[in-house]
Image 1 (tube, rainbow, N blue to C red):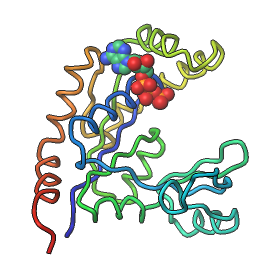
Image 2 (cartoon, rainbow, N blue to C red; image 1 turned 120 degrees about the horizontal axis):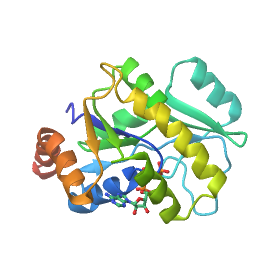
Image 3 (cartoon, protein in one colour; image 1 turned 90 degrees about the vertical axis):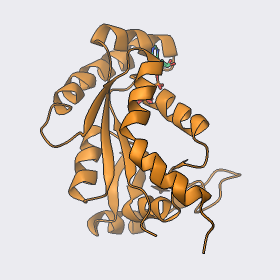
Length: 201
Ligand SMILES: Nc1ncnc2c1ncn2[C@@H]1O[C@H](COP(=O)(O)OP(=O)(O)OP(=O)(O)O)[C@@H](O)[C@H]1O
């Protein structure tokens, strides 16, 4: 089975990507899936290799980067994290739509790798509203919020880059944005529903 294409959600921090993703999952259980990331950080107590993360040594991870294994990767406080092409393919092979919540640079790499996906940019109604949401969430201090707002300007510019995003959804009213997202994914959801409800051979 080929399976449905992935959905890539990008957009400034605080725009509501996580909120939209939770809603997709609760409205369509068993249709969406997440790829299992690789990391070089040690497993925590209850974490299972291959389920929560693929735990890797730094040497193996660095080899993987050189070998083009990762669609995107980052080093956070000295530990590597990455999404492998194979992990995304595994979700697709299971018949689910793989959700990728990545930054604009990651989108460029996923495009370049030729991964079949719908590329969605989630935009705020305004920078003022984006700032309000970041403050309202209460998870970052003022300095971090200011930094995120600066990055957001660059991301907004990238959203206009020709051929990068298939659609831009403005998350003003959450219900309307969710309807737009589901509308853009209509055909993909139908493919995944077919896979979920047809008996496996
Ligand atoms: N349409 C909306 N109207 C008002 N508030 C919203 C809307 N969508 C999301 N929010 C709120 O904005 C805040 C940021 O949303 P969320 O955490 O989903 O953003 P995010 O894009 O996933 O951010 P990050 O990339 O930093 O994880 C949350 O407090 C959320 O409840």
